Length: 469
Image (cartoon, rainbow, N blue to C red):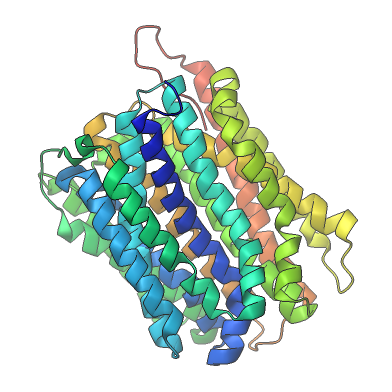
């Protein structure tokens, strides 16, 4: 198919929006110290500027994916993109920390509908195999590039004023909305059969919100306090009710049978670890570079530039690499690179070496994202029927976003465990250890996927599955 095909034109619009979604998550990172200073937020409260978006995003992704299947992917995508633009505008003009967090949450909810709708439009438009792999590699490269390069752009905008980092997505979203009206295929309006599982959506969202809130508040309340223990019990009860409801619903939010596919489970765990560990690391790095070392926002952004450039340049080739080597091997190498990058940053001190720590560590993380992010997306949607592509897409994105929120909450608890707001090299190292341990767990999971493939090869007459995590 030529690059001028209408399908590839629609892909360009979808890539713009996923770039914008990822950009929005990362752009606020560099601006956090300025936001904290201007709005008078504590470190614990500050992380909710990130977690508010991530939880709105991750908490409703499953509902967003299923809604796209049921109401039409094009329709859901367009409405959600409009809400995203309005919420972006509101977030950039408010003067209260609580209102900012609320606007970020609404913005995350909107992204929870655009992201799975966009991914499912791609997976139902491009046939499974090399053509879909190429489309997904371009799509995921756009997301990874947006996340990485958003840090650099944020540094430039924060030098002018942190509000510009929140307002910049508004005109881009409006332009993308106009382009989407003209380019998205009408076939994406097709609907699957079934109904909405609002009970499941409420239960899973409530459980994730309560879990993150509990982890954030635990250092202050005490890990062994009745409040913390009671909240954790509440999380377990909500998750239990969610599973019970899904088993009894005629049209569940999550058909639990989809989790019987080992490659899908490993893909979701892989993205949870990749995004969770990196969102947390980014938060720690911002505190380290700006609050402890006194670097400018632009200088901090430039520290992340090697990873962003590497992802932007190489990610589009990952579809070809997946065809040649299989996603499993790429994810194993990516997981090892991720762990290596975190391990290098354990050497942080008050006089960091750019050539010995910062640049090598960032390059390894860039390699990790370039290899793992597209491969995980390819694998998570492989072998899934068209009428459940929204579910598969929503499940994968949920894993990444909720992982980011939960690990960020854990790392914030580690940073503030000393009972004050003063950062130390010791607390920063301890927070990085959390990301490193998770990356090592991800490496083990990805390696077990390779062994599973050798033990149970796919029959020649079965549908292709681009294995394995």
